[in-house]
Length: 464
Image (cartoon, rainbow, N blue to C red; front, side, top):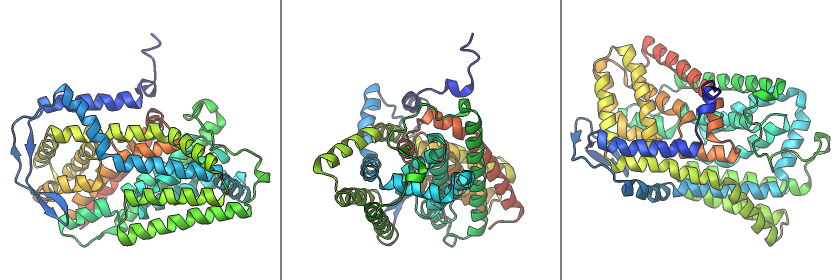
C-alpha cells in the first residue's frame, strides 16, 4: 500500500535506467514507424533539408545486436563532449587543490555579507544566464563548480547550485536573442536579417531568467526553513564546501596568480570562440593548459598533480559516461531512418489547425523533436526547412515560426536527458538527473507557459 502512495518524484527511475529505456523504445520504434527521408543540400559545409522531398524508404529495423553496437557509435559521436567534461573536471580539480576558488568565493561572500544571500542568488542567476546568452552552452561547463561552491558558502545545497548555474545557462542559451545555433541558423534558412526581432526575444529571455531567480530564492528559503524540503540532501559536497569560517578568508598573492592564470585562459578561450570559431576540441585544450599552468603556479608537485587529476576524473566520469549513453539515442534514430518521418508527420498535423493553435503546436512539435535531435543547429537544419513553408501556408510570419522553434528547443533543454551538455553540467554540479527533474520540472512547465504567452503576443502584434 505505501508503494501506491508514493509521490511522483519518488517514481522517477535512475537516470541510467531512464536512458536505457529510451534506447529500447527508440529501437522498437524502428519496427513500428515507417522509415523515411528528406533530400538534403550542403550549404557552408552543413546539410539542410529540402522541403517537399520527403519519401518513404525500405524499413530498416534494428536488431538487438544493432542496438548494442549503437552504444560504441554514440560514444564516438559524443567523444568531444565527453573529453570536455573530463578536462573541465581536471582543471577545476587542480584549481580547487590550489585553494584559489575556495578563497575567492569565501572572500566574495565575506565582502557582500551572508545577510545578502538572496541578493547573491539573484545576481548569480543573471550572471550565469548572461554567460549562456553571450558565450554559449558547452563553453560554460567548466564554470558550474563555481556556482556549487558559492551556493554552499551561503548555506544552500547542490540543487540550488544547479539552479543558479545549470538552469540559468540553459535558459540564457536556449532563449538567447543572439543564439548563433538556433536563431542564426533559423534566420539564414528563413532568409531574415540575422538576429532581427532581438528586442522581443530579449524581453522573453529576461522574463524567464527573472522567473528562475524567483524560483531559486523560493527553493532556497524553503530548504532553509525545513531541511526536509532540500532536494540536495545527502549529495557529495566534498571539495565544494568551505573549510573554514568566512572571517578567515582572504586572497593570498599565490591565489591571485592562480586566478590570473584561470581568467587569462578564459579570455583566450573566448577570443578563440568569437574570432576563430573554436569549439570543443580547442576548449578542451585550453582547459588542460590552464590546469597545468595553475598547478605550476600553485607549486603543486608532480605527484600532487597526478593524484588530483585522477581524483577529478573519477568524480566527473559518471557524467561523462551518461553523455555517451544519451547520444546513443540519436544514433539509433538515425540508424532506423525514422527522425525525418516524425518531422514530416508533425508538420502535416499543423496544416489542419487554426493560426494560434498552429503556433503552440509547432512549439510542442519542436519539443518532441528536441528529444530526437538535441543539437540546436541540427534540429534547425532538419525541421525548419519543413516548418517554415507550413507556417507560411497557415499564416504564421517567419519570425513567429523561428520563435516557436526556439521555445520548443530552448525550454525543453532543461529536462532533455539526451542533451549531452545538460548531463555534463549536472555531473559537474554532482546533481543526479532524477533529483534535477524533481527540482526543475515545475519551473520548466512554468517557463513553457510563459513562453507561449509571448508566442500569442507575437501573433497579436504582428511580429515579423
